Length: 234
Image: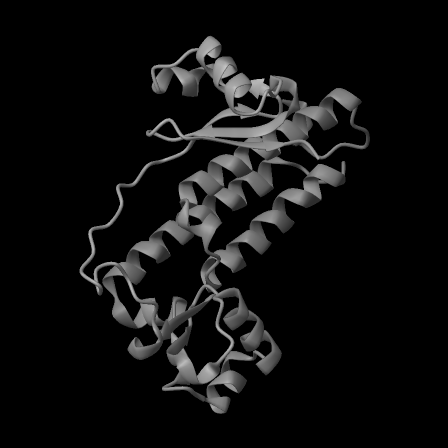
């Protein structure tokens, strides 16, 4: 355990042990923080990520620094984070400080420039986010909200929303999930087994439909109706 203490010289094995211990301890700490902090970085999550990364990186690159202290510090920070997250669920005032309410950027087709300034985002960024939602006309937007995690939620005016089968009172088609049975020129036997098929059946289907060899297939999927779709290497 000498590798956790400050030393004048560390052997390659001791550097390796520091890196391994630091890596797995940080993974454990992030696991305790929770999956939410990985998928959506809120203010508190982002602050924690910066602090944890900075604390663990120094002893992994400087032999004069001990590893024991940073591990204790990370343990304390994770505990405080867990307590803060719990209190935020119980105390509305603290919750709003950590995770503020969404900010309206567009209402009834009108851009709220003051809120854009408050959110510190430009018109160009707003337009790019609308394009990602396949929206080209701002006047069709009933509401656009700047969420605490940095994403923009967009809601179209009802008269501009796409017509659904329910609106037309038509029976919807049955959902059929496609299973990938060939990936990168290799057969996925587990997926074929789920469908009650074998490799011989798949090869026969390839020969009948496309006369294609397995090695030529980048991706092949089969749905529950046994519809085969193939993408070849180009």
